[in-house]
Image (cartoon, one colour):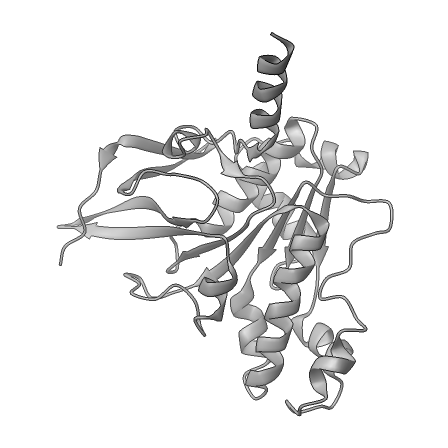
Length: 258
């Protein structure tokens, strides 16, 4: 009897339940495999940031710790955007459970690569500096990065540096053991899900968000395209952005126009 109970306990701890209505039902084990690095891909206005912020809020509400790294919006803007859904974010920021960082991607690249323009020694030198800074006594269960697209823009003339940074970032997440979500911008109806393709290879999972035009209206939809360590439903389903956050409708399948 004890062994059965232990097995159930272990199983529960191996997945991150996002708490988003209908979303966890897309996974056979009831959530995203813990410790996974997941790309959240989609075009403009598909709800990528809202999804990640919703996951973070639900996590801290359940006693977990979360770090949200924004390369574009400052801390105040992130908090305000979350409060619009009725989420009491400040309480968790003040308690130290929810860490929101605003980082200039140019500063990261300068720290890691200096004036190196993609030379062979960039990898060796940049390994001395972590791709993200986590406070010494802070151990996040969830990390969200918003977004990789900003890093790409900052390193447009140093393509090799971006690739080096990317590889180190995914290794860094693996070392922390956190479940990480990395936002990436795509075309409105994507056929590829990252700028270089390396992101898709390195990521354990890919979640794709769509904003689909049906005649004179648009519908939001979501798809779990890939999840390396967990079984999931292979279909695109309806997603709603409500005044209380994201809601997924696993029984409402969406068919993309070919």
